[in-house]
Length: 329
Image: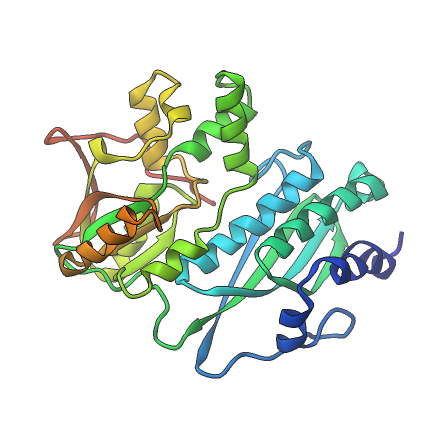
């Protein structure tokens, strides 16, 4: 199948059936089919843009179901928009596919397309362009969204005394990878939960919209809690202390019956796509109210301090980590 035939068959025509037409018509002046997309940004909003590349057998198993690969690829990119408090609007897709392989078969492409647009439809984001080429399997997605001017959640806003918080649970991503690679065996329910967390992470878009006027700094946890929190510390020119005992761990993670390993995964495993954010003391009651109203699930796990770097403590003693998180190079 030629490049433009592939695009029309699996990505241009599929979109018409699944996207919310009103949103597309309001913001997409010109979509797929020309040299560039023409997009209309609403007045008084800033454009948030992020791009990530996922490589087979590095960011996902090459033999995973195509639907799972597509959902993971788009959801992890949407997590970057969530980290900034942005509303998803558009995305582009660049697919690199090995020639004459299962990945260029109609069955694989149909499954990938199905998973991609199922996620796009759910999060109301429009595919507006992209590219295809041959080579080792990789997926590059550029996600674009909008945020009210001067309201974006950034990494450089933390202050001494701010509380460090995370949404939901941490450590599931690393445990899920151990299950997928057959390094960890659990009961069926817990393994299913972890696989879902890996292939269908939930971008915390609702949570970030609630935190816009509460959090002083934020990012999503992709490379590991310690490594990512250190980005906030570096941008804010401060340090942080994590109370390891307060880490929120899921029942599936606790079912491993290895608390030391569970805590290590939570601190440095990565692939959680939860939000790590800081909250000034005077804003903590507002966060507590949202938690009490069950509008957000979040836990205070530490504090921003003077100095530099992220330090982990358990019962007043240093909690040692062999590695802080995932290294891309």
